[in-house]
Image (cartoon, helix red, strand yellow):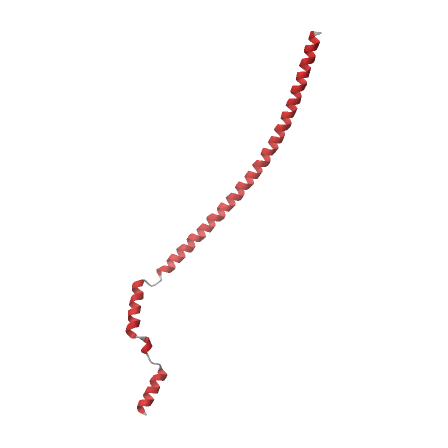
Length: 113
């Protein structure tokens, strides 16, 4: 009878272990499924980030090219020294004292009488 009790006890423990093993397998399947799902999400995020990085690099290159064009354009601007020379000549000529052709004809007409 002692052998029968021991046998029944072993069978009971075996069933408990089988139940625990089944539960662990189910948990493992759920964990695997979650990991696969999370991996796919992370892979998608990485792909999106790479696309964003490529776009940022392209935008940066465009900005660099635009800056180069602006710098090239500013090379054609007059320097402050050139502007000072022009100002000197304009002040020397004093264009406000110029007369129009019409005014000259009027003055000549008045003189000739």
